[in-house]
Amino acid sequence: MSKLAIKALVATVAAIGLGAAAAQAGECPADKVIAASMTAAGHTANKGVTDTVLATNNLGDYFPELASRVQRIRYLTIEAGGAVAWHAHEDRPALIYVVEGSITEYRSTCAMPIEHKTGDVAAEIGHLEHWWKNNSGKPVVLISTDMPRVAETPKVM
Figure 1 (cartoon, one colour):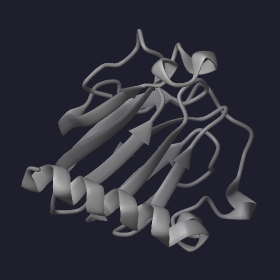
Figure 2: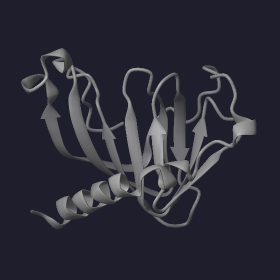
Figure 3: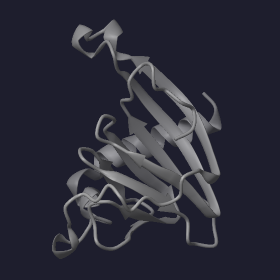
Figure 4: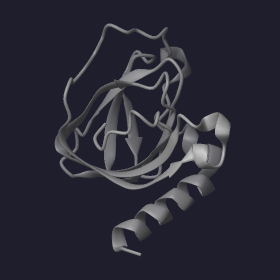
């Protein structure tokens, strides 16, 4: 197993082990939650993002009702000043684990930016559109797990 794969496995296990405590970190404050705004799009293209697909599972091989879905785990590095383009999660639930660094999320459902730090887990599900920016002076490393449709499995977000 490669060093990169081992890091991803350790990060995934750590994210699962952190449970609800980590999931609460980096959330939108209750008094800042707003109705989803579909008009405030941010960056329209990735900048300084390296996205490596580590593994996929064709869920239909085991669960016929999920034949249209793939389970995927990715390793992302966002350079200082880099950004992950505006995208939606209405049909693609995901969990993001911050392995290293700090990154700012701009959500359609939050009136203020959300800072995610090392060890945080961000849930991306439902009527949500957002983008991420690395405002720090160092690269950020993320592990992303999601379930895109089989026909929609791009290597870059």
